[in-house]
Image (cartoon, rainbow, N blue to C red):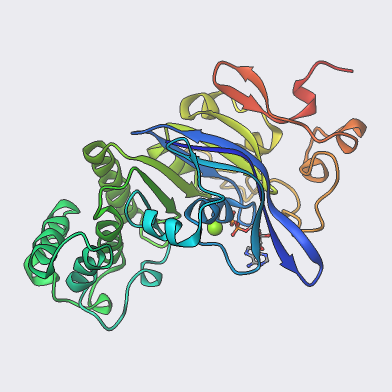
Length: 323
Ligand SMILES: Nc1ncnc2c1ncn2[C@@H]1O[C@H](COP(=O)(O)OP(=O)(O)O)[C@@H](O)[C@H]1O
Ligand SMILES: [Mg+2]
């Protein structure tokens, strides 16, 4: 359904043109969920926004292809990208208010999606919007229909934005941290809802999150990003059982688990240091200055993804045969 081939997205900044996404390749099939995981700033959102064609004005897709149903989206004119958005491609965000108008009743906003795309007249749009409210399990849908965003809880608002995104039964849904702002119980409900709607619609989903607990719950496949690159890619169970890249191993070790509470106050084994900002990333392996296993050769060569097991790839020189 979606295949990225060597995607490079760069920003024009006062310090020159800097790559936030630096050669990302990944793939997701219909009915499947790919999670893009990794620390804040590693390029997850920029990857998703590149696919949607919703990048900031100072951003450019410099290289690579974004194949959606086999067709490259990169060279398409803006009007064609707009037509795809909200129909075949849809996106939901961390903060539902970015997608909702504060001064319009939520039901009208969902109905509006059909009007914008010219896919239903006013009466049919209302009926279809009401049906969507029921499909996303908004209780007491008829009354909720007339409410304004500020009258709703975060979880209910996110259900409204999901209804808008799914109005035209998209082939691909991009979800950028859509549960991060919600309480964990509400988060689980929204994840279950997305999984249920995915089964009904058969859509592919790219789910961006920094939260490994969310990855474990919703992913089929996982791509771990670091500093604008995919450093590991695997089916979800394989990734959790046999993480190959030192960065993935560090993320998994830093995760709080039951029975691991350190009553003596020893901190969890966090990955040392921070993700360096754009333009300050080391040559060679960009993780090497934080890597507990880095060797001299890690500075000389940028590791490429290579197979470590069936369907499992990692980009680390130490996984290759010693030189
Ligand atoms: N409009 C912009 N101009 C310059 N740099 C940007 C812009 N938007 C994002 N970035 C930078 O791109 C990098 C990747 O950001 P992002 O994809 O948002 O990370 P995340 O993985 O947290 O979603 C970050 O270093 C961020 O500061
Ligand atoms: Mg982000």
